[in-house]
Length: 273
Image (cartoon, rainbow, N blue to C red; front, side):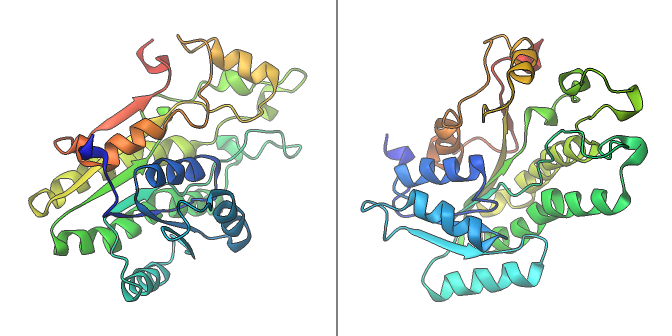
């Protein structure tokens, strides 16, 4: 079990105020890691920090406002952490725009026919460029000091296409039906490519990179959607938000010391059908 001990490690999580970002922090704090949670929104970051803080981790939990699309900002955060004696050993690239599928206008803007280049650029800048920039800054430091771990949080949509039937709404014309937008699949597939690239790039420097692809996580979605999705999952249920703790702990610790460049898909079996 000593392989899971992270008491001498510093982990930084991007997009940490989101549903799974907080859970990743819980998982790493449980193993004794010093955890730096980051997000672009100071308000949501403070909320996440307060939800995580307790007497056991008050000297191991830090938060930094950070925009993953701004390389200078990332470099500044890295410098601030170093000045505080915190050298990042583990980077969890979790930041993403997760567009909720809904009818938000007369002409459904999630549909490819209506999807704007501006929205495409913005979502890719956060989800894939942000992961590259954070890996560039923090991964370079890991390579210089002799090792580290990068974990990219992808999705089961990194291995298959969205089933748009999940989002179909009665009473709407085909051209007004909401869909999972093109950006989500492109970003998650792209993260797997980035994972493989990084896995070989610094392998001789002791830096490993893997990806975790969660399936659908229950978070109060409507009954109709939940039923449609669970019908596609052999385990016949969505994931609970805390069910990825063990995978994150494994992938970020020496328990996975010989795993590199892999995409761990945890989706209740949906992708094997």
